[in-house]
Image 1 (cartoon, helix red, strand yellow):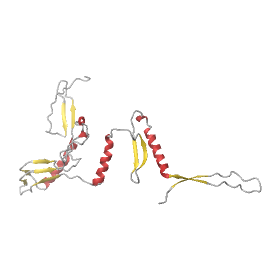
Image 2: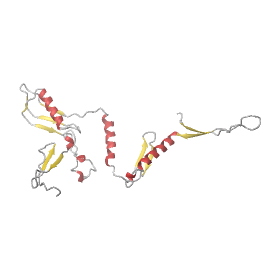
Image 3: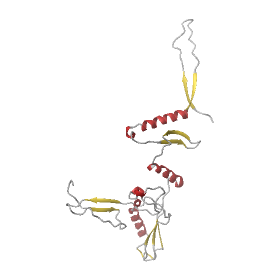
Amino acid sequence: MMRTGYLILLLSLAAGLAGCGGRAALQPPVTVVAVDSAAVKRSLLAARIDSLLADTVLAQAAVGAYIVAVGGGDRELYARNKASLFIPASVNKLFTTAAAFERWGPYHRFQTRVLGDSVDARGRVAGDLYLQGRGAPDLRPSDLDRLAFVLKARGLRSVAGRVVADAGYFDTTSFGAGWMWDEGPYAYNAPVSALSLGGNAFDLGFAPASRPGLPVGVELDPPSGYFALENRGVTGRDGA
């Protein structure tokens, strides 16, 4: 394979003519220096990253970076504090996303199925109706409304049995290995489930009453009977 590179030509040109005989002065030989283009690119990359990391916003931060070119020996392109230990935090999302693209590709669609006995002439399902989750991470209450509309359009009017939420497509491991035990209340740490609605999380809103001494208003979004709220909040005076 032919190796490409930058050629830096160091040229020394004669500034004038020789004084005798009207002849042009002989030019010295041209020196040609071959430079590795990959090394130049690495140097430019390092300078650019160093410039970004020199921002005063990061003055008190612990910063580490390690960049390699995948394939061909995984050549190191940039390194800063690569032997130091850091909390990965949201950097892990890069690997999760890359794994998802590798496994499913960019056009994969997660399915949420409705299963049950066939609808009889009266629009009735004799047994149970199952909502089977298969890992959709973005299922919303509005999606359930659309599912209900489709079922009605297909003639369903009633279910004699139960409406069952089926999350059995995944195993029973709800929390990943290494997850922090004290981050349970946060939405980004919601338990894993094959059937998740609204990201397996909800918003809790508060609003003051019309006058001091009355209970604080509390609202769940989306509304749910899964929780029993004990509201002890009392509206205070302005500036209290």
